[in-house]
Image (cartoon, rainbow, N blue to C red):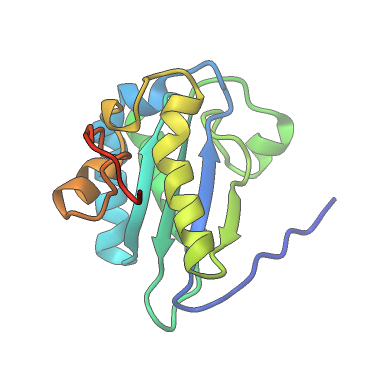
Length: 174
């Protein structure tokens, strides 16, 4: 059995992909308020900054920055997943392994994490979050997807016009 060793970098910014076990489910958008509540409750006890977040029907992507001196993002994901599972109930088939570890049938085991290396890497993963609903054919433009932090970032003036869905007339750089 493989032993997964995750980096432990206090105060790091980390990109995540978290998926449901049933990749045809729409649970995450159907229960968006439960997800939001789970994140709020977790952040109240175990703070982290949300740099980006996009929720699709069966998976989500996000970038978090952990507090200085804190590197434990795994416990935060455990809390979020547990909160959601308790709220919506356990369903779906569970392997013997999942049953023995007390895991629900909702979530894919584990999650993908990538420690952000520099500003360019951060920008790449931020835009990946914004673009993902378009990639999956859910909308034509990132701003058309309601479950994305792009809307917060537009309000804060942190999004380039082409990402914000703003048409720019005229020639630039000529």
